[in-house]
Length: 117
Image 1: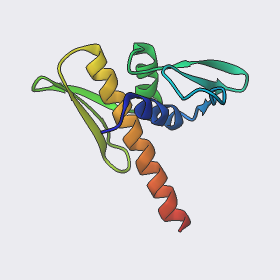
Image 2: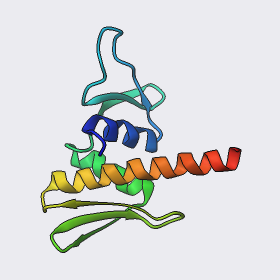
Image 3: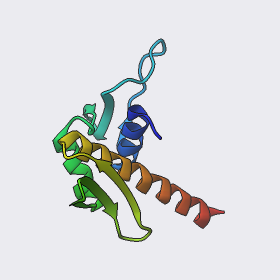
């Protein structure tokens, strides 16, 4: 299971954002500093930010359902990638969205390796 930091990094990369490195004497922490577009910077923490989680859903074209007391988030296009989070709270949904984004990124990277190798 990935940590919140790992999931957040993967979701930023899946969105195409550049992650700003922390100062040399510090580790990466949440929220991440990211560059959304040239000269547009901000903080990224979609597990806690509903608007950022929704941005992931829109950009990656994810599908969301609530089934048997759990949020289910999937990307059906191409390879099926999905994530499930129990409970009904918004952070449970946000976590499932971010986890699905991480899986989409991993699948895209693997597909790229297959095409290049």
